[in-house]
Length: 128
Image (cartoon, rainbow, N blue to C red):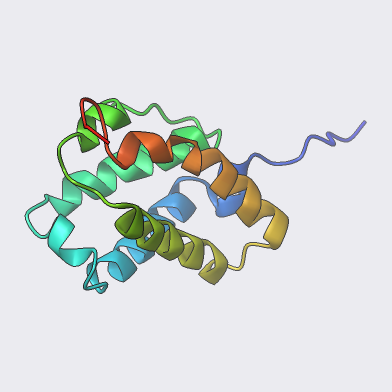
């Protein structure tokens, strides 16, 4: 009997290589955005890419463990605005669509990853 289990979102994106390619393209778009580039100018992009690959891989059901900080703590005090988050999310969406993913898959990925928006905009201990 054939296995009829649909592939995980991780597998639909192309596994580890697909996630890495997605994140590379995503940060190309982010760093070309004048609203976002200053936020990342002093960041270690290699480290950030590594953490993002782990986060996305784990969130999409891959055999990956996210070893980074809690998202609220990692983003606390950074002053990330809703406009910046929207631009960031838009570039992620563009990166997914450039990979040729279809609407339902893109929506499932977005739903899974953007559960943490409140942890990124504002962060722990922020007055709002």
